[in-house]
Length: 209
Image 1 (tube, helix red, strand yellow):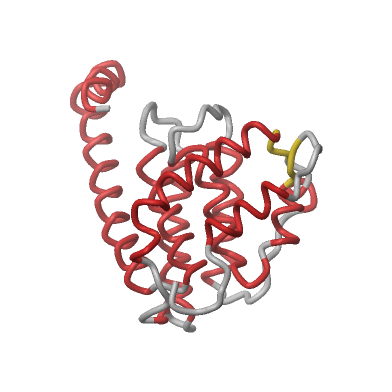
Image 2 (cartoon, helix red, strand yellow):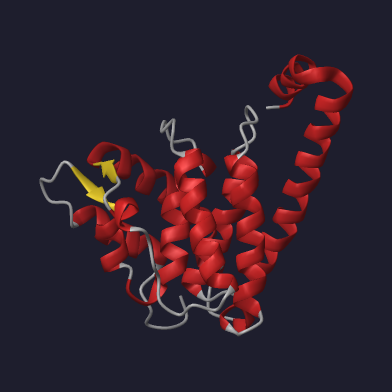
């Protein structure tokens, strides 16, 4: 990294080490420790279970709703994070969180050296709402009960979170391109559902994914 800001991978590892012997970490724990990375880290944490190969079924819909709440705050330019009190109590078990951090670090190890603060349009009055709208669309797609399709929008949200946490405008631009591809994917899925029926759509998706 080109400055003294804490890297995203270091931030996640710090959260993991803060567990000590506890049986898990709540979203409030993450919320209280993200520091200046704010929206970025929370988006990454909430997207990981669906974006990466982590065995964590049942998280896509509730985390998608929370991501939508965060995206609305981004759209309206809120500078400080807010989560419902009940959401803050959601706990990720220690082993699950360890697997999440491990999977994220494996991915970071391949491209983290390319990420650095640049083109800082994402933190502007125009940039943050644009990314917020993208995240809101991806969160809605993530919530839809369509089999085998949570990964694409969750990965876009993950990339947005990385771009925000590292203040990398180019990386956030990549997220916008990936978001467009995800929308096209869902348009294709809807087309399959309309022409082949739900069963036919699921068969095609199973072959693709």
